Each structure stands twice: as C-alpha cells, then as structure tokens.
Image (cartoon, rainbow, N blue to C red; front, side):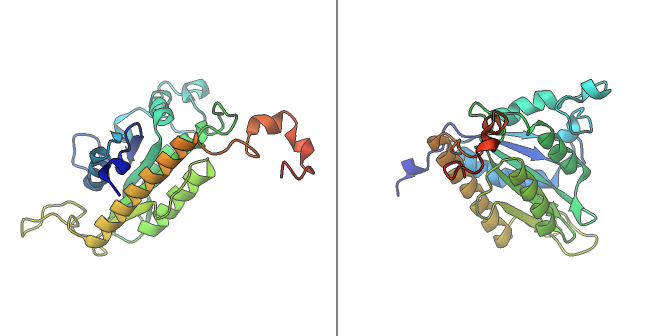
Amino acid sequence: MTKKQWDFAGIKTLFFNCTLKKSPEVSHTEFLIDISQKIMEKHGVSTDVIRPIDHDIATGVYPDMTKKGWEKDDWPKIYKKVQAADIVVLCGPIWLGDNSSVMKQVIERLYSTSGELNKNGQYADYGKVGGCLITGNEDGVKHCAMNVLYSLGHIGYTIPPQADAGWIGEAGPGPSYGDQLDNGKRAGIDNDFTNRNTTFMTWNLMHIAKMLKDAGGIPAYGNQRSEWDAGARFDFENPEYR
C-alpha cells in the first residue's frame, strides 16, 4: 500500500456539532470531532463543522418551516452544505442517557428533506455516508449511536462498519471530554479505546465514501422512487424487478 492510495481529494465531510453551547463557549464534543477532522484533512478530505445551536433552525419536519408559520429558518441554507457533502457525521453530548435536543432537531430536519430525489430518481441521501461521535460523563454512548445511525440509514445514508465512536467518564459529576485535569492533562484525550474507534470510524467513512463516489453512488435499480411512481409497482410480480 502506498500513501497515494489513501488520497481522498474531492471527498467532502460535514460535521454537525450538536452541543447545547453557543460559540465561542468551549464544546467538549469539538475536541473529539477535531481528531476525526485532522485525519480526514491529512488525506485530502475537505471538512466543515456546523454548530446548529448558533443558527436559527426552526423545529419541524418540512424542508422550509417559514412556509409553516415560522418567521425564520436557517435550515434551507444549511441543507445546501448537506447536499454538497459526501460524508455527514452527527456529533453530540449525552443528556439523561439520550441524545441532545439539538441532535434530535437536526435528525428531524434531515428527515424533512430526505424525500427529495437525486438525479437518478432515488431518495436524495442515497450515496452519502453517515457516522456519529458521542461524548458525555454518563452512560449512553451505544444507545445514542444506535439512534443516530438507524436514523441516517433509514433516510438513505450508507453506514460503514464501526461508524460510531465516543467517550464517557465516570458515572455522575466529573470532568467531561477534554477538560483540564489537576495533573495538566485533558480528560479522555489519551483514551486508547476512544482514539482507536474514532480512527477506525474515520477511515471507514472515507473508504466507503470513495467507493461510492467512484461507483457513481448506489446502483439505481429497484430503489427509484421516480420509477415506482411511474408505475413500476405494477410490475412487482416481474422477477427482474424484484
């Protein structure tokens, strides 16, 4: 294997940091995003991080909530970045054993636009790759990841092997990921389990994204909403369509 093999130039990644903290307040989740982001950028992937809490994102499951009575909605503008991305990574903290309210809101808004079609007549998110990063100082990493990855897969994202990673401290009050400790170190930064899983997730996201991009996406046969609407459902007994 040569270094040139792992050139992912042309791949674009969008990280959603679903922290409850507005910028510029320090986000513990951002520390974990930074690990994945640096690996990607080292190998040619262009990355962007959005902190949804910094934007006026309306609540709802329609592409533009200003058409449903909301005065402002930044989602249509953010969705353009989603459309341009090959990889979308949803990242956030655990609260009460579950994903943050911001994470839930982003998933709902991704769902609101999932019914759009791509140029092949498939649902819009076909061909995109999804993953997640979770932080917190209470149990729930796997539960939160399960919810995120199912949601992304349901709306059309391809989920690679080991597409999640996370860190939790001891149960109860205590330092969060990246907090400065009395010994001068930062909590969790040298955790081998977290670093390994974050690295595996990052590489698997890049590998699958490149495979899909080189292949022109998911093959467009048997999964086209446009064909179903055009009458393919009446051909359901045809073994070639099944």
